[in-house]
Image 1 (cartoon, rainbow, N blue to C red):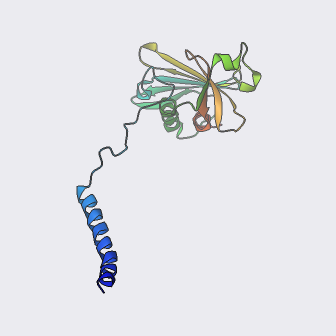
Image 2 (image 1 turned 120 degrees about the horizontal axis):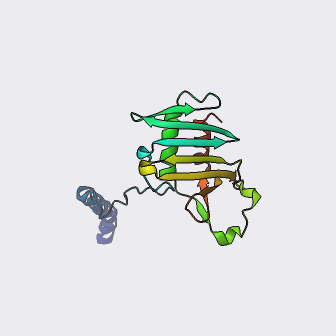
Length: 180
């Protein structure tokens, strides 16, 4: 009979111990490190912050769009055709992506070879964005063809060796800014 009493009490006792453990864990309420890390921009625009940019020039298909920041707002200075009504916000957003969106991969000069393959689409017809910052600092990037999966675009950045693969949404943001 004693073993029967122990068996009947074992499960409730185990449940009570588990409950006490959970309550103790809840009251302690803290982990040594919550797993959160401070955000660090991983994009290619590192010479200056996007909010310090003063002028943006976008070339696509032989056409040029030029935006200038006046009083904290982007104003369209030159355009071969109409742009979306919110083009100023789109330019601001696209600049932020250049600062924050890290390349998915960087193709090295050894991988590319001595001549740039035409498949990369980084010739004269490529979408080209030039950003002028404080003290005439410049950031120039060309957006080429999409990679075979279509998830990224080949790019060429002045002063950066190799060919970074940027997510397609970065290229799309610049095209949307000019209404493409």
